[in-house]
Amino acid sequence: MRLSRRSLLASAPLAAVPMAPRHREELRTGFERLAADGYALLKGRRVGIVTNPTGITRDAQHIVDVMHQDPRVRLTAVFGPEHGFRGTAQAGGSEGRSTDPATGLPVYDTYLKSGKALADVFTASAVDTVVFDIQDVGARFYTYIWTLYDCMEAAQLAGKRFVVLDRPNPVTGGEARGPVLHKEFATFVGREPIAQAHGMTVAELARLFNGVFLSKPVPLETVLMTGWRRSQFFDASGLPWVPPSPNMPTLDTALVYSGTCMFEGTNVSEGRGTTRPFELLGAEGVDGRWAAAVNALALPGVRFREAYFAPTFSKFEGRTVGGVQIHVLDRAAYDPVRTGIALLVTAKKVWHGFAWRSDDWIDKLTGSARVRTMIDAGAGTDEVTGAWQEELAAFRRIRKEYLLYG
Image (cartoon, rainbow, N blue to C red; front, side, top):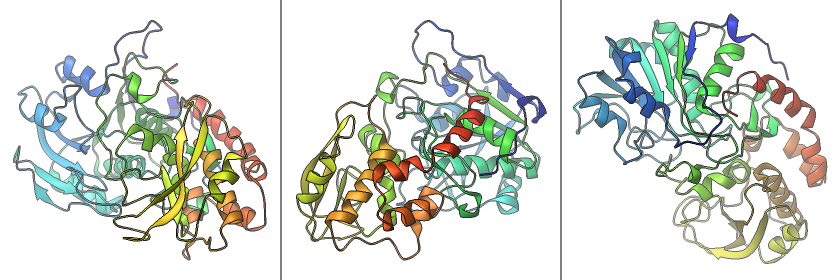
C-alpha cells in the first residue's frame, strides 16, 4: 500500500466548525448547524446539493424542501448519486436527469460520472458552491463516499467551492476494520486505499481525501456535528433512519453490511429480494451444517440461525434456498468484517457448490486478490484476517490525523 502524506496545513483552504464539547448534549447534524446559523456559509452563493432520501431533518423533512422554501439560501440545483435523488433505482442504477416536481429544481445525475464529465455537469448547472449531505453506512464499497470523492475532484476542476454537512457513521463504534484497498484494484466500489470498514464520517473522509488522495485539493469547508461520539451507534442519535439505498432498510442491515456484502462476489445469495438483505445468506443445496460450522467458531457478539428463504429478485429468484440468518447480540463486541470472512471460509467448507463470481468481483470488494486466493488455498479465518493487519495499522495511523470527534 502506498499512501502519500500531506498535512492539513498543506491542503486547500479548509474551515471546520469546532469539535463537540466533552459533555453530553443532543446531537445536531451538519445541516442543523448550518440552518441554525442562517445559512451564513452559503450567503450570496448559487448552491447545488448532492443528496438523496437520507438528507432529512430530525422531523423527517427533506433538506431540499427546507432550503428551497428559505429565502436566506439560493438553492438552484440538485445532484443525485447511485439510486437517485429520490432513491427509486436499484443497485447499479440511477434516476437520470429530471425536474423535481416538489420544488421545480433541476436534478442532475452524477452516477458513474467523474473527472471532466462530472465537472461539466457542475459547470452546466451554473452553481458556484456544491454541498454534500448523504448518510453513509461506513463501508468502503458503499458508493456514496466515492460520489463524495468524485464530486470533490470535479468541483476542483470546475472551480467550485465544496461544503460537506456531516452525519454520523452509524455502525462501527469508531473502529477501522478489514483489508485496505490495493490501488491496482481501484473501482467505483473503492477509489483509494482505505479500510473496508473505515470508521469515519463523511466530513472526516472529505478531509482525508483532500489531504492525502486528491492530486489537487478542492476549496473545502466542513460543517461538523455536535453531541456525537465516535462510539455511538445510529440509534443513539435521535435521528430517524431512512434507508440510504433500497437494500439497506434498517440499522441492522448496515451493522452487518461491511462483512456480508462480500457475498456479492460469490454465487451465494446475499439476501437481496428478501426483507433482510445482508442478514440472510443462502443457496440451493445449503443446509444446517453451515450455521453449525460458523457457530462452532464462537465469534464474539453474534449467533447464526439455520434459515430458508425464497428471494423475489436477484440470485435464486423465486427458488427456496438454505443458509443462515445473522443475529448480532452484542454490537460492541461484533466485528462485521471478521464475521464475513468466517462465513466465507465455512461456506466453502460445507457446500461443494460454492464459487466466486467469474468476474472476480470479490477482489474489487476486498481490495485485492488476497482474500479469494487465501480461502481457495484452505486458509482459516485467523490466517486471512491476520494477513491485512500491517496495512490496516498503517491506515489507522494516517486516519488518526483526520478524525474530528472523540
